Length: 195
Image 1 (cartoon, rainbow, N blue to C red):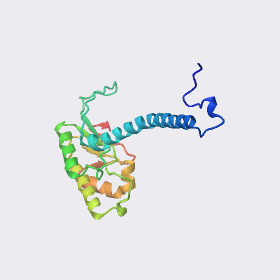
Image 2 (cartoon, helix red, strand yellow; image 1 turned 180 degrees about the vertical axis):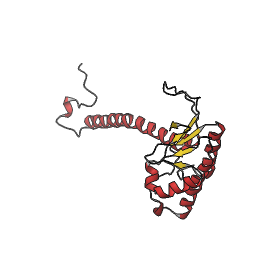
Image 3 (cartoon, rainbow, N blue to C red; image 1 turned 180 degrees about the horizontal axis):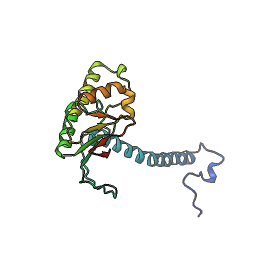
Image 4 (cartoon, rainbow, N blue to C red; image 1 turned 120 degrees about the horizontal axis):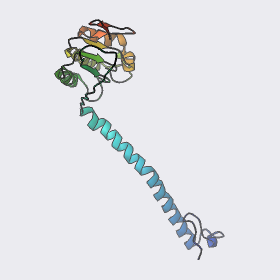
């Protein structure tokens, strides 16, 4: 007996697709095709939902401190402890002034010699003029909370793309009012060394 592929109709259905036998086979084929489609599409969809769930429900509540030791044959001074903060996205889901204060206190507890802020302090791509007064106030207070960062060699910041989209002059104003030194295509000498 010759076996046929599950998606192929038997020869006796070639002339009359409306016979009960052939209709049943068509339903079986449709069921097999739907089952295959579900297998192909369901697993990636489930994985995407899990990733979204993690991104919105778990990750925003995590605050990870990573310690790294970087050695350089060119550095001759005492070791320097550098803290780097990036992509805070104030005004995004779960990130407002209280969360920023939590981040700043955690960074200050590491007792760094210098703190570098690598940009994207503001969430989203909407300009300041397109946001509500309440949203702008929340973002401003989050920026002000970054002023709690303290380090003996200073706190330095550059802007990220979200900060330019929001309005760089507002972000720079908020950061500098908190005592943060803003750098734009500049180098700063600290203690006789280029930083």
